[in-house]
Image (cartoon, rainbow over all chains, first blue to last red; front, side, top):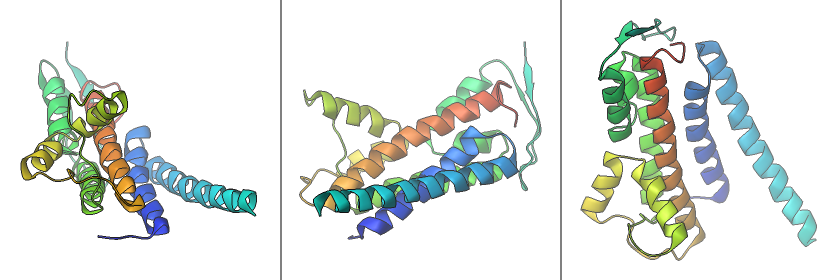
Length: 58
Length: 142
C-alpha cells in the first residue's frame, strides 16, 4: 500500500483526534469539539511546518 | 467500597455501571487486550466502537504501509521503547507477531510512517484502556 504524505497526515490526525476527543473530555458535545480542535491543530500545524521548511530551503 | 460511575450521555450509551472489586481491573485489562473493549464492558457502545475503529484502523494502516513491528531484546534503547509502544496494542501486537507482519526492513518514507502509526496505535490503546478504568472507578464522569 502506498499513500501520499498528506493523506497520511489526514488519517493520522483523524484517528488520534477521535481517541483524544473521547478520552480527554467527559461530555459528548465537548468530546466532538475537542476532537475537531485536535484535528484542525494537527493538520494546520503540519501544513504550517511544511511551508516553514519550504521557506527555509528557498 | 464501590463507586458508581454515572450514566453515559452519548446516544447509544445506556448502561449505568457500578464499579467495585476487581471489575475496574478487568475493564483495564480488557481495554488493553482489545481496543475499545473496556468501554464496551461499561456499556459505552458508541465510544467503545469509535475507539475500536480508530485504533484498529491506525494499526492496520501501519501494517499496510509496511511499518516495522518492534521485537523485544534487540539491545537498542529506541527499539525497546518502540516495543513498549507496540505492546500497548494488546492482541493486535500478538496477531502481528503471529503472522510475521512488519518484519521487513524499512526502506521507504511511508514505511517509516507506518512504524509510527503502529506505535501510536498502541499508545492510544493504553490511553483508551486507562480512560475506561477511570470511568469504572468513578474518577471520570461517564
